[in-house]
Image (cartoon, rainbow, N blue to C red; front, side, top):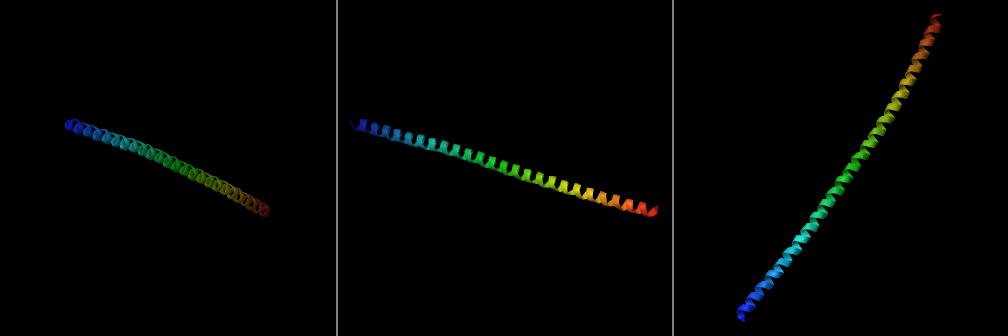
Length: 91
């Protein structure tokens, strides 16, 4: 009977050990999935941030190009006015 109790005790200890190991493994997998989800979320957030920066830079470049075009147009008009003035004085 004593041998039976020893074996039973060892079996129970093994069962608990396996349950604990299974629980730890399950928890490990859950944490691993959580980490992966957080990494994906962070990567998407970084991509969105970079996309917003790119949009902002493109808008600034377009605004700068429009301003330069307006300055060029103004300078061209001044040059035309100057040329007309010089031409009228030469006549």
